[in-house]
Length: 290
Ligand SMILES: Nc1ncnc2c1ncn2[C@@H]1O[C@H](COP(=O)(O)OP(=O)(O)O)[C@@H](O)[C@H]1O
Ligand SMILES: [Mg+2]
Image (cartoon, rainbow, N blue to C red; front, side, top):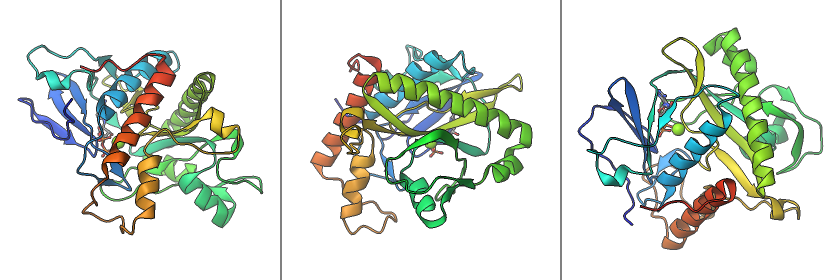
């Protein structure tokens, strides 16, 4: 199977993101998940086999499972026959929405940028946490830690008040409530499948009727941190997402600025295996590889 890192379709390109290419398809959008890997906001040259399909099919899985909590942009993974075969499995037809200009992060466990902030200030996005927490600590209650949605460069953690200043108070309250509910649903489901969903990021947007819906991707290994429960219970954090690639990059002397360094073959393979494993564990199925 070939990896797909670039797409070119006879449709109007709406956006080329770090990972996904979005085209206009009539009134809707066609979102194509490529096999591109981004880490530290830099896109690597090597594609990760099956990554795009995992992201796409896992999002479809979660969109269906969570539609009772909130309506979402998902329409179908069956794409028009006349489009190239390499798009199958990695593409989704979605409703066009106007994205809210914040990223809605929910954390049930402390790690990553939140851990760093906590170690410096004792709080995360203005939320004071109890003392003595360490990397991987489960929080008493999941916290909503929004961030800016930077067009270029790094997203920045912000307080709830600042988020409300960007999207409006009512919208901020509403997405906070929904994001936490979605996270709790995903966390409990994943735990039953042997995975710890440490944190995740949601995006919301206004649909054509003006109601807020869930958009973008849903609880994928790109937008979330997944740890193997078996290891977590023994006090170890084994990540089933792109943390493996991040850990490798941290050990090199790369300055995290473009251009990206080459990724060794085994890092590519192991990252691919981790994405596939997450898919398998959550859905109980093998990814159908076309
Ligand atoms: N239903 C939707 N309508 C409009 N835009 C969307 C929708 N779902 C997702 N998006 C946007 O499409 C882009 C997805 O591509 P991605 O590669 O994740 O981009 P980024 O580099 O910004 O993270 C994001 O900018 C996201 O906000
Ligand atoms: Mg994105």
